Image (cartoon, rainbow, N blue to C red; front, side, top):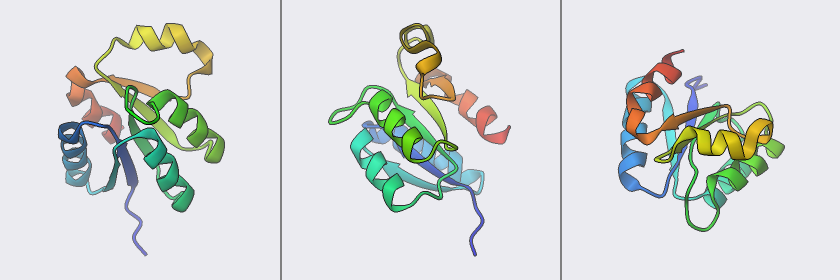
Length: 119
Protein backbone atom coordinates (compact mmCIF):
# COMPACT_ATOMS: atom_id res chain seq x y z
CA UNK A 1 0.00 0.00 0.00
CA UNK A 2 1.28 3.46 -0.93
CA UNK A 3 0.94 5.73 2.09
CA UNK A 4 2.36 8.86 0.48
CA UNK A 5 0.45 12.09 0.96
CA UNK A 6 -1.76 12.85 -2.04
CA UNK A 7 -2.02 16.46 -3.17
CA UNK A 8 -4.26 17.95 -5.85
CA UNK A 9 -3.01 21.11 -7.58
CA UNK A 10 -5.74 23.11 -9.29
CA UNK A 11 -4.68 26.04 -11.46
CA UNK A 12 -5.35 27.18 -15.00
CA UNK A 13 -1.67 28.15 -15.36
CA UNK A 14 0.49 25.22 -16.44
CA UNK A 15 3.55 26.99 -15.00
CA UNK A 16 2.01 27.04 -11.51
CA UNK A 17 0.85 23.43 -11.81
CA UNK A 18 4.37 22.34 -12.76
CA UNK A 19 6.05 24.41 -10.03
CA UNK A 20 3.80 23.23 -7.22
CA UNK A 21 3.96 19.63 -8.50
CA UNK A 22 7.75 19.72 -8.37
CA UNK A 23 7.71 21.08 -4.82
CA UNK A 24 5.31 18.35 -3.76
CA UNK A 25 7.15 15.46 -5.44
CA UNK A 26 10.46 16.65 -3.98
CA UNK A 27 8.82 16.22 -0.58
CA UNK A 28 7.83 12.66 -1.48
CA UNK A 29 4.19 13.42 -2.12
CA UNK A 30 1.95 12.11 -4.87
CA UNK A 31 0.83 15.16 -6.87
CA UNK A 32 -2.07 15.26 -9.31
CA UNK A 33 -3.23 18.28 -11.31
CA UNK A 34 -6.45 19.81 -12.60
CA UNK A 35 -6.96 22.89 -14.76
CA UNK A 36 -10.19 24.22 -13.22
CA UNK A 37 -12.61 23.84 -10.35
CA UNK A 38 -14.96 21.47 -12.12
CA UNK A 39 -12.11 19.08 -12.92
CA UNK A 40 -11.05 19.20 -9.27
CA UNK A 41 -14.55 18.25 -8.12
CA UNK A 42 -14.60 15.37 -10.60
CA UNK A 43 -11.23 14.14 -9.31
CA UNK A 44 -12.34 14.26 -5.66
CA UNK A 45 -15.59 12.45 -6.48
CA UNK A 46 -13.56 9.62 -8.05
CA UNK A 47 -10.80 9.55 -5.43
CA UNK A 48 -11.33 11.01 -1.96
CA UNK A 49 -7.91 9.97 -0.65
CA UNK A 50 -6.33 13.40 -1.21
CA UNK A 51 -4.97 15.03 1.95
CA UNK A 52 -5.03 18.56 0.65
CA UNK A 53 -5.53 20.81 -2.35
CA UNK A 54 -3.72 23.86 -3.67
CA UNK A 55 -6.54 25.79 -5.40
CA UNK A 56 -6.28 28.83 -7.64
CA UNK A 57 -9.12 31.28 -7.06
CA UNK A 58 -9.62 32.75 -10.53
CA UNK A 59 -10.11 30.04 -13.16
CA UNK A 60 -12.33 29.46 -16.18
CA UNK A 61 -15.28 27.05 -16.12
CA UNK A 62 -15.54 27.09 -12.30
CA UNK A 63 -13.60 29.36 -9.95
CA UNK A 64 -11.75 28.13 -6.91
CA UNK A 65 -14.16 29.57 -4.36
CA UNK A 66 -17.17 27.69 -5.74
CA UNK A 67 -15.15 24.50 -6.27
CA UNK A 68 -13.72 24.64 -2.73
CA UNK A 69 -17.21 25.02 -1.26
CA UNK A 70 -18.44 21.94 -3.14
CA UNK A 71 -15.34 19.92 -2.27
CA UNK A 72 -15.72 20.81 1.42
CA UNK A 73 -19.29 19.45 1.25
CA UNK A 74 -17.98 16.23 -0.32
CA UNK A 75 -15.01 15.88 2.03
CA UNK A 76 -15.08 18.31 4.98
CA UNK A 77 -11.73 17.12 6.35
CA UNK A 78 -9.70 18.03 3.25
CA UNK A 79 -7.29 20.95 3.74
CA UNK A 80 -7.67 23.50 0.92
CA UNK A 81 -5.03 26.17 0.38
CA UNK A 82 -6.00 29.10 -1.84
CA UNK A 83 -3.45 30.22 -4.41
CA UNK A 84 -3.92 33.68 -5.85
CA UNK A 85 -2.06 36.56 -7.41
CA UNK A 86 -4.52 38.84 -5.59
CA UNK A 87 -4.26 40.19 -2.09
CA UNK A 88 -5.39 37.82 0.65
CA UNK A 89 -7.40 40.56 2.37
CA UNK A 90 -9.72 40.80 -0.62
CA UNK A 91 -10.93 37.26 -0.03
CA UNK A 92 -10.78 37.34 3.74
CA UNK A 93 -12.96 40.46 3.77
CA UNK A 94 -15.35 39.13 1.12
CA UNK A 95 -15.72 35.61 2.51
CA UNK A 96 -14.95 36.10 6.18
CA UNK A 97 -15.80 33.09 8.27
CA UNK A 98 -17.60 31.52 5.30
CA UNK A 99 -14.36 30.95 3.43
CA UNK A 100 -13.93 27.37 2.24
CA UNK A 101 -10.15 27.80 2.40
CA UNK A 102 -7.99 26.68 5.30
CA UNK A 103 -5.03 28.83 4.31
CA UNK A 104 -4.02 31.35 1.63
CA UNK A 105 -0.79 31.70 -0.32
CA UNK A 106 -0.07 34.53 -2.70
CA UNK A 107 1.54 33.30 -5.90
CA UNK A 108 4.40 35.70 -5.30
CA UNK A 109 5.09 33.91 -2.00
CA UNK A 110 5.65 30.45 -3.40
CA UNK A 111 8.35 29.79 -0.81
CA UNK A 112 5.58 29.82 1.80
CA UNK A 113 4.18 26.72 0.10
CA UNK A 114 7.20 24.78 1.27
CA UNK A 115 6.69 25.98 4.85
CA UNK A 116 2.98 25.06 4.79
CA UNK A 117 3.81 21.65 3.35
CA UNK A 118 6.56 20.89 5.84
CA UNK A 119 4.47 21.98 8.84
